Amino acid sequence: MLSSQVEQIIDNRLAELTPEQVKDIIQEMIHKHLGWLVVWGGVFGGLIGLITTFVF
Image 1: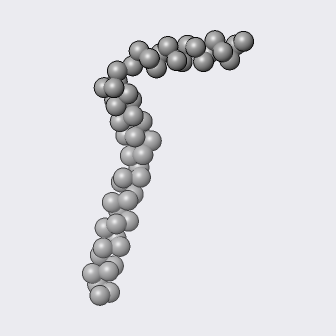
Image 2: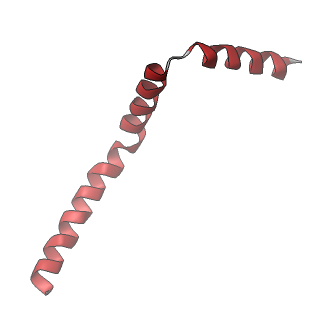
Image 3: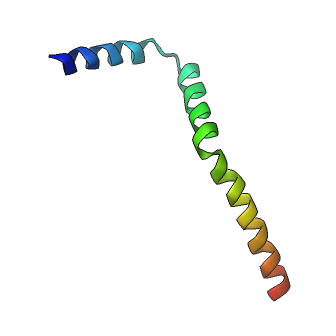
């Protein structure tokens, strides 16, 4: 009973979201949780690029 009420509330809230709001939510989540991945990817990519420049 409680789970069906929660499900109904979530469905109603999702139905109210516009595509622009969904896009903003996803971009915020990516920025908040995956920002460190972009930074470290750049650092390690740069190091690998430097190493391969000197090795080859």
